[in-house]
Structures are given as C-alpha cells and as structure tokens.
Image 1 (cartoon, rainbow, N blue to C red):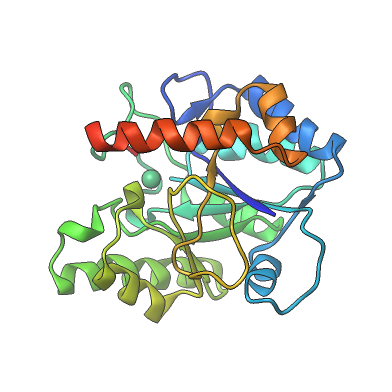
Image 2 (cartoon, helix red, strand yellow):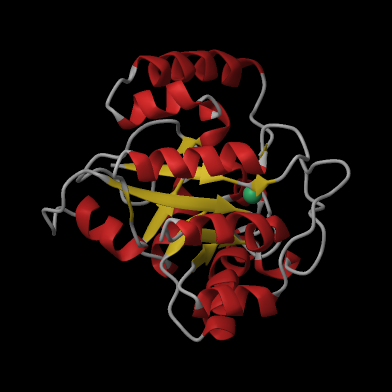
Amino acid sequence: MLVVTYHSISDAGGPTSIPPDVFAMQMQTLADLGRRSLRLREFIDWHDGKNNSPDDGVLITFDDAFEDFAKVAAPILQQHGFSALVFVPTQRLGHPEGWIGANNPPRPLMDWETVRSLSNEGIEFGGHSRTHANLIKLSPAEREEEIAGCAEDVSEQLGKPIEGFAAPYGCVSTEVVEAIGRHYRAAFGTRLALPARGQDRFDIPRIDMHYFRDRGHWAGLLQGRLNYLRLRQCLRAVRSRVVRTPY
Ligand SMILES: [Zn+2]
C-alpha cells in the first residue's frame, strides 16, 4: 500500500514539476505491475483495519490543483482507469500560484468550473487550506478560517462532503492537527514513508514522486525493494536539518 504525491505535471522544472512523459511512465508502470488506484474511502477503511483488501492499492494525490492536472494528468489517469485525490487551495483557484516557494514563472491553477467537471467524472477533491497558508504561523481564528473555510468552499462548490486534507508545505503542529481533525477524516503530510494500518490518520506519509523519476527505482519500490526509499529518507533527513523543503 502506498500514497503518492504529485504537484504539477509539466516541463516547468524544479522538484514540484514532473514532465508528462515521466508521469506517463510512472502510471504505465503501476498498470504493468497490476496495482490498483484507490479512492479515499477505500484507503481510510484499509488504514482503519476495516477491510481486508490486499496491499496492492495506491492512492494517487496531487497538491495545489494546477491546471495541468486537467489538461495532462487526468487523460493519462483515465487511460488506465485510475482515480486521483486533488488537494485544493480554494481561494487561489483560477489564479496563478503566488505563495512562498512558488515556481517562477508561476503555474496556473484550475478554476472551479474545471474542478466541478472533474468531480463529476470521478476525480476526488480534498482541502489544501484557503490561501495556501503556512498554518503553523496563524492565530487560532485565522487557522480555523483556513481549515474549516476550505472544507465549506469545496463542499459548497461540489455538493458533496470533503474528507481529506493536506497542509500546505506539510507544516502542522498539535493545534493544526486538532483543527483538521474537527473538519476532515484524514490528513496527508510530506513524510517520505509507506503508510501503516492503525497509525495516526492525521499524519499519513506519502511518497513524493519527484524521487521516483527513474523507472527502475519506481518499479523496485512497487515490487517491495525498499533500499532506494531508505536512501532517499536518509538524504532527506540530512537536508531537512539544513534547509526546509520549499513546498
Ligand atoms: Zn501546496
């Protein structure tokens, strides 16, 4: 079982843009190895120990709702019958990214019309705050506005309840996690690891696909070879002591 993270599928460069041909290879590899794409509800049931589905599922997530999700990623996902969960900074939709750590030039985000039409086609949406704020830097009132307000925006626009959240920059504190827990059923972070049943449902680790642009490394992980993942975890731990990851 694993949860993977994407941001932009484009040639924009930087760690948060994966070129379309690399994304297509990563999806093709999943399909070739017989992996299933899960919906959030199925993943939560597995995580809670409520179903005995085999561990061959993958929850495919995208942070930031970039326009290239609709134009490039969704058609490739559809070719394989895969779903995805996209985390939306609700008040930024329809605008270019403009937050700390954004690419230069900024990449455009989807608008609500596109999000609604993808939702009708089966793509799932979750929260990523209202303004892509660093939630640990906010007052309690501002925090609630970003977290609860985002849930309101998505459920109002899509007419269905929202269940998943990913904090911008992966930045959370005890207070942030408590606030998320009042409005969502699960939250995903930036910790580079595989999920395990029964662990904290508001700190679910994800594999950032920036690290698996090589088919051999990616297929190896899917086949249970964890040596490359362990190496990346180690290097990332060293790097995070030097500089914070910018996304
Ligand atoms: Zn983000």
